[in-house]
Length: 499
Image 1: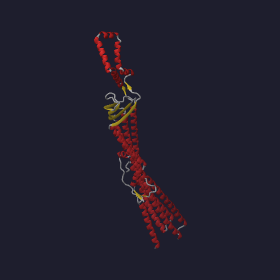
Image 2: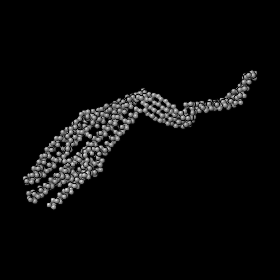
Image 3: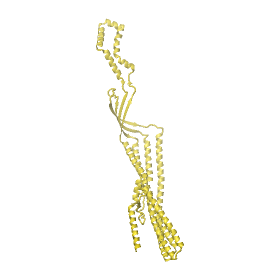
Image 4: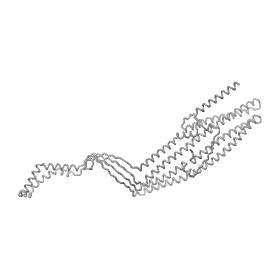
């Protein structure tokens, strides 16, 4: 009685320890694992950043519809000034008063004028009056200074030149290039989102494979533990029978060989479970030694999703990332051909400028700052480029046609792949049905063998065979359920419905 009490206390302690251990572990669902893997996966993060980059490209393309404002500043130092008059002309202007004074001397040395001067009193009086006035007012010096000022005005001071300009340009017509480029960037953003969806689906499939691998190994580990317990019980019974003389040493050795094999399989299953969980932790971005338990790992029976996957050809084009990406690429190449063609069409733009210069010429040439504005229309018409534009346009059209061909080829391959996965689901259903029947037969066979062994009418080898068949049937049933679950995942991926 005391021994029984001790055994019960030990079992209670083990149960409490196991319960505490499970409580300390993190229980994860398939959705939890998918979410963490999508957050942790490097390719998904890259694809998300590509979506962000495509959004910036789209905004930049839209800015082409709006006016562009720019400012320009210039400083220029010149080694020499600009002279509008030659040195000889400048010298003449600077000495214009002296030149006029020299006229008097020239006239007095002219015999004819001298005779007139001496004979005509009015001429003599006029000349004497002009000479006296010019001498009294220093006309010669005044005229020389005036001439010098005029000569200086013909010299432009451009040693230090300052220019500032603010320009505004608004495109009126660009050959359809702006509109096409905006559509290309919109398609590029949608393409990036489609590629992100494709990367996410790949990650989810990888996580599902790792998740259900753990569930499969965990179930097989429980099955192996049960098998080990059966063999240990049988070893104990054969040992008793041997002591009673109704079993041989060979019978006991055969049981112990099977028991050793089963215990080795149990150790392998435990190691396999640990490694499988490490892989899932790595995918989810968790420490490799994290204590995790999967929700489906705790279930006695694996639930198989029975929802039917329905789709149409339009659904495949819309949901399958590869097909949608090729469709978008084909549309983008069509638009790129229009962009290439637009480079060889007339363009029209409205522009306005405000220019500030020093020296300025608004009121003569002066070394001060002064501004002016102007508006206008700029037109550019390509005339001839020796076939460059036409050849570039034809090349862009060829790229679009190639992408269309690739799309048609991919559509056929995807249809074939979907049909293959549909057949795999039907095959998995048949295999599961057969596995369930085999398991029922193995259960009944083991029950009959156990009864016969206890009654002494069935040899230990027959019971061992029944137990082995029972183990194999249960293992195949687990594999069949996992295959059916994964077949549904693969079909959903093939139809673009994996969420």
